[in-house]
Image (tube, rainbow, N blue to C red; front, top):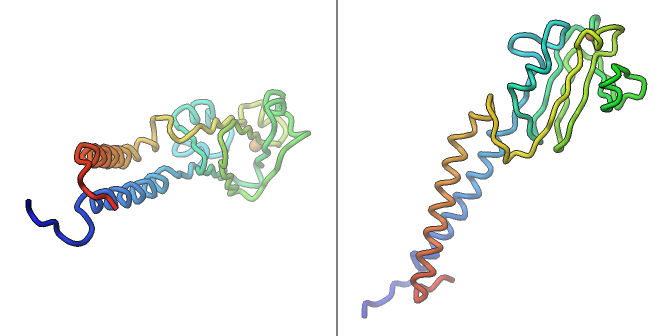
Length: 177
Ligand SMILES: [Cu+2]
């Protein structure tokens, strides 16, 4: 029988390293996935020309993301409304209203947010936007794809950790702690 070395067992070290690596990968994923979108960009801004249905279709919004409305406050404003207000182009019972020309809206939770321009006739001309905020696990096209390499790295780490755990199960004589 070979003499056992002193200090932490190799298995314990593997598990510890895997745990730290997973934690770091998770932090990186979170940072990589939080995005800020300028409404209407790159082809437009918060204006009367942008097709907002097309714009949102090309993007996936997750909790933690932000949207920025950039516009001339002399020409437009931003009113967050309910579904009813959105459908009727009415800002009468609004949730909030901004007019700085650079309004940043944090998308804090899963759900649907509705915004329109409160100036007469602008919403009826299409200046309204519906933003669906979905759970981060949902895959999507656009900027979210940039997080893909990080996600696969994290997946590889998880697989490696699972392998280490399996190794421990198959070698019950290895002291863990
Ligand atoms: Cu307007």
